[in-house]
Length: 510
Image (cartoon, rainbow, N blue to C red; front, side):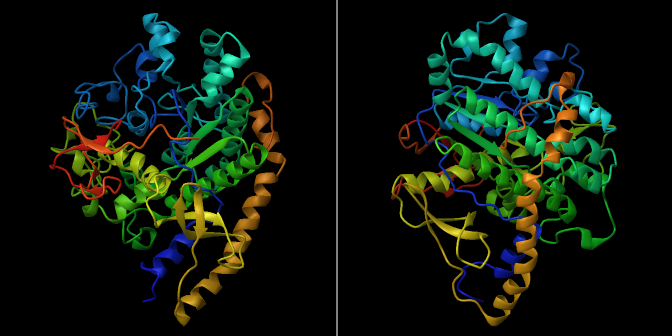
């Protein structure tokens, strides 16, 4: 084994699964002084919009045991407790982000949104419902990304009297763009549509996200956090739908379906290409890609290390079956049961994660960057960056982080002859994938298809798409939190993992 410090074979496998390697500069989550969070997305981010807009409270996730871990009652969040957006808000020292539609039902003043507002709605798609129906994919929900953006633009005048006020608000806000687009794929895939047909939606979804980002930048957005898709091949809903006796379809290290995770990787690669294009168009804007895919995949690869000692392929809450996912008895329905300790499970209900898993996803990406920002030396993480490590223009490399983000792209280290051969054999395929991805991102026919799907037949624009507030250490807090990190007394900037059952810690102001 070479001195890479980790299995180079696993590294090569990662490159095979990822069709296109994208340059992403890791930028700390807390770059700048944020006074609010403005969020868009679907059920992975919805903090109660669907709950407040749906008059009949009969849906399964409107009932216990949803919300049991932290809120102790259902809130409209599709989990047992908090979501990633909640952990981000806590980390920034802001209140939990209220759902926009709550004000519509209670006649609250929009001034309640000065510290943040959430437009995400469970079931939302990136593409408009009319377009999806035209493609043969009916969706019961119509709150697409364009509708959420319209809500935001309608609300802005109530918060900002002048254009300078608007720019001030947006320049001091963290814009959370999703996750969005997952339901554009989930609905047809779980209905049995072929992966080839669904993959054709990817460029349209990316174009929609890019168009929305560009419009927000035009309005004055200065910092946007854009998550990628999760590894859907690990979700109990998909494992149930596409259960197979062919062991070759599964990753032996995780039990996840390879072809579905490869699809998620394709979406994420295309998204990162588009984000790189937007960065070049708007160099003054900070655009952060949140790699939720690899953050969550680590939990499936090493569950015991993170305290997930339940069966990782099973949902904590569900109606039975090999993966405890049953569409006839969903979590919250009669006939479904819930595990004793959700903190030991990654999946909550077969499609959404537990608070424990979300807390990790919200922490891992920011943690290494924060250490680099605060002068902790030799913080090394993996990222897709432009480099000269190989003859390829882009490559997944280890990078050293510092106060300025990526300060050094590290080499591969000594390789054995076998490893060198393996790397060289991959280069032609990777080169072709990179070129294909860049070319497809530039194709003009994306705009043609996208325009067909817009509401009212009116095409949306087809444009291509500071200083920290202070270091937040990890302090103990009361409550039933599943926790990831504990502050070391010898080095308060160097968090370490603690498992469930130990004294809980989370992010607070110093």
